Image (tube, rainbow, N blue to C red; front, side, top):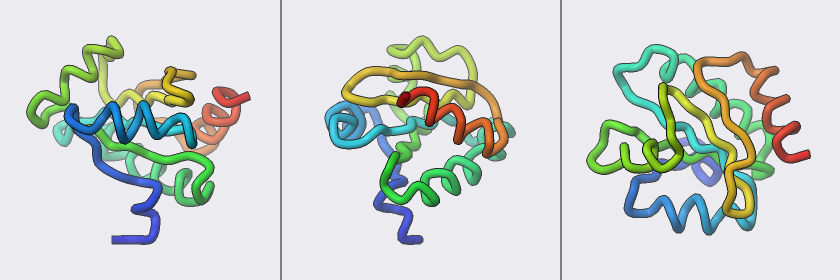
Length: 116
């Protein structure tokens, strides 16, 4: 595992409230709702990891695989219609979202605009 694991971690329905909602009061958290059968999910994952790693703690990345157990309930809570969907949670609230694989520049601008 890389040193980025402090900022990049897997979450599930069981720990989502603590590791994302509560933790978002300390730092913004991108939530990557993904599935392994989804090609755009595979494309965007390393781009998200690179952005979060480069920002070195400014923002974290929580990866939620929607096909595992009850995790789809979180996708339902946020009315996610397609994958991947990336949410930005800060201070317990959704500040923005986008769907699909996007280039690094788009993701950087999305984070900056959502936190402005």
